[in-house]
Length: 113
Image (cartoon, rainbow, N blue to C red; front, side, top):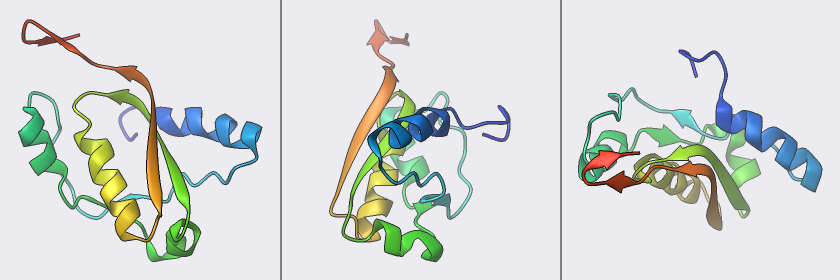
């Protein structure tokens, strides 16, 4: 977000939540600690890189507890980041986490396209 000056996933989620009368929580997840870029890492390397990175801040915990959450991502590569986010939401008391993505990266002959 810092490099791009906006959060693409949030820009997708905001009108979607409004259209369906759902709560929009762009700050339901925070980075509890810094991590390296995911670029160039294997799937297992990506999972290790983001393990424990995300958390639900205390100010949002009550809005997450007992709710089914729809997590929006703009691009899914290995799913490591989405999985780490889902784990943090479940740890904070969400009953379920669903994922919707706009684009899925796939590998063809060892090259991500």
